[in-house]
Amino acid sequence: MTDTLINVDLATPATENPLVHNRWHPDIPMACWVKPGDDFIVETYDWTAGAIADNDDASDVRDVDLSTVHYLSGPVGVKGAEAGDLLVVELLDIGMKEEAPWGFNGFFSKQNGGGFLTEHFPYAQKSIWDFHGMFTTSRHVPGVKFAGLIHPGLIGCLPSHELLASWNERELALIATDPERVPPLANPPVAGTAHMGKMTGADRDKAAAEAARTVPPREHGGNCDIKDLSRGSQVYFPVYVKDAGLSVGDLHFSQGDGEITFCGAIEMAGGWVHMKVELIKGGMEKYGIKNPIFKPSPITPNYQDYLIFEGISVDETGTQHYLDVNVAYRQACLNAINYMTKFGYTPAQAYSILGVAPVQGHVSGVVDIPNSCATLWLPAEIFEFDIHPGADGPVKHIAGGVDIPIAYDK
Ligand code: ZN
Image 1 (cartoon, helix red, strand yellow):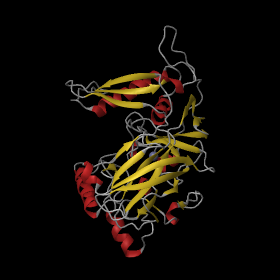
Image 2 (cartoon, helix red, strand yellow; image 1 turned 180 degrees about the vertical axis):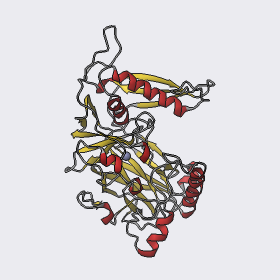
Image 3 (cartoon, protein in one colour; image 1 turned 180 degrees about the horizontal axis):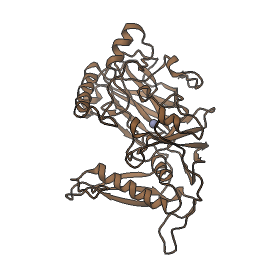
Image 4 (cartoon, helix red, strand yellow; image 1 turned 120 degrees about the vertical axis):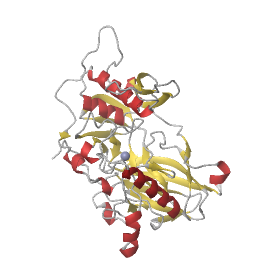
């Protein structure tokens, strides 16, 4: 039987569990040990470790302290790993903890992190998604049902001291360009809410003051939020420190490309990851690898009928931008939301669908000056009605009365 090396008790605060941490720092002690060729299981909290409840009140999303996230299980020490190696991680399987067959999707308040469409959805909202085996539905978003594409939002190895210093230098320089911006341009280290795993005392305090927050993806992978890095994938991670130090968390039952709602996917209330590790000695230089690469799973939801929305780099006010893919993808998303409202969805329900369903985002063109073109692929089969345009439509299939709970700023 495969060993479970890290257990989490969802009823106990993550801060009391020395086998999890919420910062990146090379000196965080290994939580457990494996050797190349081993397979093992680690359990995970949701990324907020229980701050968001299964109810119809979004005030917890409004009030969440984002300096406490993400709670990661690890670091797992891999015997024999050295800086410059590649750590090969096979995601053999991923699942939910039996006592937590649900997840949440939220929009943060613009005052507390925001999201991709925060100018259009400035207040905290949340929807709850129930898991039925491999499928999910929501009492807050009727008319859709889809299969999960379960993946870790966040996985990677510990940075070296040198790499950590470069992260802090470049991110603090960005913040300094507009330090009062709401939401902020990046998140600096915050010592008070850092959970440094097994570290205690003066060592902990020194490391916590410089440890990197877990929000952005970086060279090591980290919070990449790639829906296709799902169970069955094989990932090749750069190793920066002796014993590698692999950590994982932020499990998503499903997510659309871009994780546009920021809180973000369907965040699984509790889960587990079954992994196998191998090493490629000196693999970073041999293969010229700076960021992780991976092979996708042979098993993914089989949606083939898409309605594809185009967006160009002309923003909501009609202002022309130069080849700005971010603006173009935002327009594609807004176009899809507007379309879905014609079938009876509220804008918030439609936004949530784009955050959680297996929608694809594509960079379609980046050379035709002055407009880049992005596309958002909405799988038509997830809807319990016909979502296509036709001579007699659109028909309002979603009756009023149900919406996603909202919590206005205090
Ligand atoms: Zn997440």
